[in-house]
Image (cartoon, rainbow, N blue to C red; front, side, top):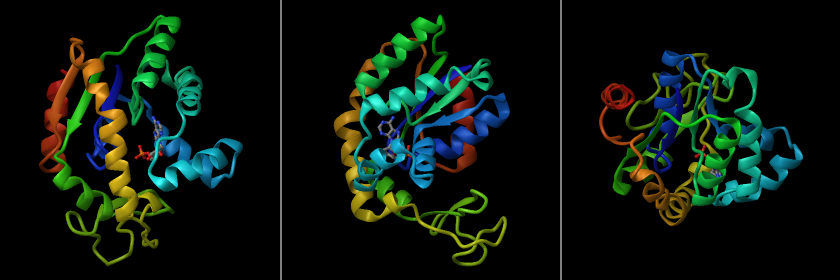
Length: 213
Ligand code: AMP
């Protein structure tokens, strides 16, 4: 299965992607995760990407297209993969189509996880993660057992810098300007499915399984 997950920031793409990838034994390829690792390791790419990410803007197409070009050709991606957060512009989608054609493969599903704007800011600003083990929660909707502490390893929970209210609002505006036009790009293809991202994690997961069947 070669899958693309679309949807606004805070729609739950990452959470659902982790489950699907575990079930299908395919790698979850998140350009956001790859970029965050590059920022943390202070690589040349990370240094370039940092200012865009901190502002809630998109990193230039050439950077993320290069990431995906390399990543989907790695051995663990030969049996399929899930692209989480890529493509995010029409230019990225066109580059992905060209790359897949070059590689003689194609996508099996493009899934849009739809969540109304009114829910997204609260979802984003309440997110917390554990830098030590990767565990995630939400201060309102899925709070940790002990405030500020990771349920899994007891580490201190942190908020992603770009989940602050001001940056989250800009990420949402960026989504509407640059990413939602992608829906028109994919909508007419038989592999496209839109599902409601509202409800419990299990409810959304069930809808996803239906969309993948
Ligand atoms: P995410 O973790 O998917 O919310 O991504 C976090 C940030 O990384 C975004 O706000 C962008 O600054 C950057 N980013 C991730 N994926 C892309 C992409 N496909 N195109 C451009 N920027 C991206």
